[in-house]
Amino acid sequence: MKIQSKNIRNFSIIAHIDHGKSTLADRIIEKTLTVSKRDMKEQLLDSMDVEREHGITVKSRTVRTFYEAKNGHKYQYNLIDTPGHVDFSYEVSKSLAACEGVLLIVDATQGVQAQTIANYNIAMENELVIIPVVNKIDSFNANIEQTCQQLIDVMQFNEEDILYISAKTGQGVDKVLERIHSVIPAPTGTADSPLKALVFDLQYDPFRGVIAYLRLFEGTLSKDKTLRFMVTQAEFNATELGVFLPHMQPTDVLRAGEVGYVVTGLKEVQKVKIGDTLTTTTDPSQQPLPGYKESKSMVYAGLFPSDDNDKDFQNAIHRLALNDSSFCYEEERSEVLGKGFRCGFLGMLHLQIIRERLEKEYGLTVLITAPNVTYQVLTKDGQELRINNPVYYPTFDKIKTVKEPYGVVTITLPEEHVGDIMKLATSRKGIFIDLNYQVNQTILHYEIPTSEIAYHFFNQLKSLSHGYATMDVQFMDYREADLVKMDILVNYVKIDALAFILHREDAYRVAADLVMKLKHTIPRKLYPMPVQVVVEGIVIAREDVPPLRKNAAVSGDKKSISKKQALLHRQNINKRNMEHMNIQLPQEVFNSILDINIGND
Ligand SMILES: Nc1nc2c(ncn2[C@@H]2O[C@H](COP(=O)(O)OP(=O)(O)OP(=O)(O)O)[C@@H](O)[C@H]2O)c(=O)[nH]1
Image (cartoon, rainbow, N blue to C red; front, side, top):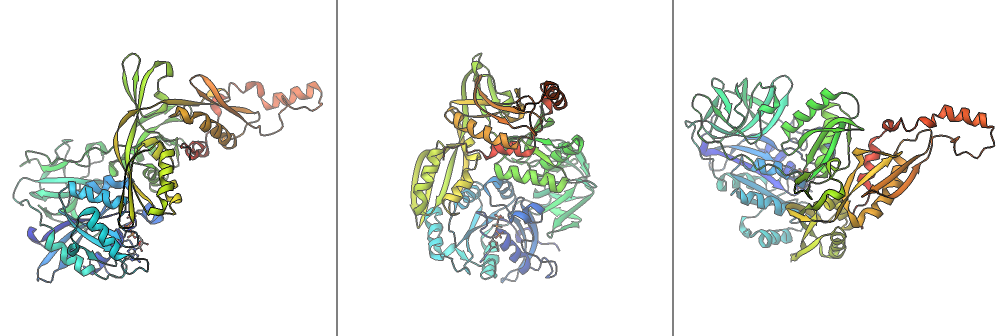
């Protein structure tokens, strides 16, 4: 069905986590009869296994729907459902570059939260029309007036512009559908200009190669023309074009203003990049679109295959990175774990989701080392190093200064928990910026080292506030800090994959805690194995992993010397130094580092 571009509307649904984006997308799909009643299921767009299991959106999804408005016109609505969790905000910014407007959803039972403000700011930066929508008005706990007042006070909306809905029952959703075409502008651009299409997402299909998700800003896309990605210069002839209904539906042509996909047939994933511009070779566009800012990884960790399927592991990492441009990687080699990748993530949930995707979508089991942030090290001989792997951290005698990243943390919470949360932020070396009271909601700002946020900060925030506090982090700058590298020795052998960096003042406490944990997680051998923590050449903590069975060497039994020697021989005790690389490091060992309480709270 051909719809004139003046009747197209491209918009995203944005909100804090769990405020009802996917449920509203379901209602819109239902009301526009995009999917038959038989095929309709809850959170239809959250189709990945990890999304259904965690009940969260990880990837943005696009759907083309058609809406017959009260004014008698028929509109094409291209809707993008986005994730709400702070770790996936890069997905939100990518989606917004493909839209002219957004629906900003706020849950009336919770009010304005940290991600509501963060997403509102992203929409403002993209100069989009924002429709404020208060959701869950059917709920017993809904506080509609208060939520409305927060929208007015915190984001300066006009009271008369705010819509009230229940995405669950469908109440008020008709008004949202009407508001979309009346306030969100139609896309600009003309179908007869040279093609200019933004690649806002990518997916890999083992049979069809790379599939690019596009928003056409100018021109027309059809199968008969050779196409080119303007940044990577890769050329191809499309094997299929189509739109999302929400399943992929082939079409013959896509025009300026529309959202759709192109099957490239390209098998080398390096030839395609999210944020690139697609054009034709015969009548190319002169300038590519601005694309996206690179995402900034907050935490890094080593990922290693837990068996020998190197090739599968490598392919899986490449394909996952194609689909998730905020996940970055480079090859790494560990003495103990062999070949793997050093990977960057936007946060701890992102790390967990990547691990689960590798397991579920690619059938791989993965070993993940303890995460760390990037440090800027200035050496005494004047070198400036960026260290995202503790293995490459210079020895202390070579270091002049070290800087660590800081973030501005926005926390929203009810007034009664302010004391506890301020204590938590201070214990994580947080520097207080300000505190604002808004209609029954407190907004706190702190500057905190990102290494302190990575380790359990979010969970502790949730538990101290009984689930009410929410947070958002924006990277700020690098600042000098007194940091040390902790080397961990098992049976006198330094285990590179276990090293990590922390504040000097926390070193003794963390080391004592860590050796106790490692004592119980490192698989036992026939002989006792010392576990030591070394900082700047000094052993600051030690525990012994007990032997598997009675140890002849230390046993006080009154056995004859020859019997003792025989036992010693069987237990290979004198061989133990040669065996040093045979130490097994199951995931629990790395989890011991992850589980320790880095902050003193
Ligand atoms: N009572 C009530 N519950 C709702 C309403 N809308 C959504 N919910 C419930 O709120 C929860 C979260 O809804 P989702 O639609 O998954 O929220 P989301 O914003 O897409 O979540 P993320 O994508 O993970 O950020 C689900 O249990 C929904 O059933 C509503 O209008 N009323």
